[in-house]
Length: 173
Image (cartoon, rainbow, N blue to C red; front, side):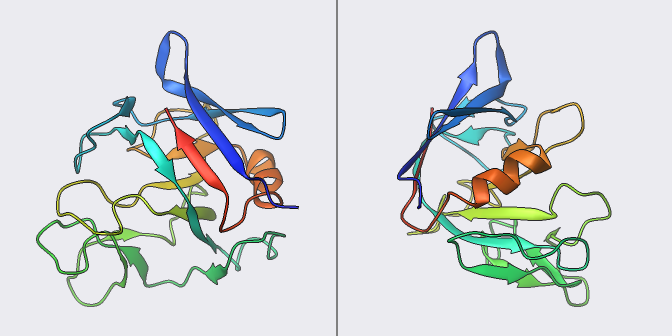
């Protein structure tokens, strides 16, 4: 059964850490180095405040079996990236790296993007400079801050994936 609501809140005394609540479970998470921001801008390091929906799961099939989830699933390929250039017409959308095209490579050498939950931040409409590539993904071992995403441990992500679906609301505050 899908969760209807996921609440993500900043931890008291540390704006770069927080708690994700789902069905009575509490999961520690890392937030953006700029904390949770109401007026997200490209490059500010903030996690956007708001209500979002998950769009799909991106996953590294070369590293992990397909996880159980209600979300649409897409394998991460070697050339998959996310456009972070506000001047590009593909801003805040997935792109294929070709030639010198810049982008946030999804097939990373570390494990941070082994599982990515894409959310609908700055998508309808997409506004240049209002933030891109805001995901739920895996955390560094010390739950260090992100560039604006919400990050968690692999076991927490796998539990979350079993409960999250396209109709789940993600509230970040």
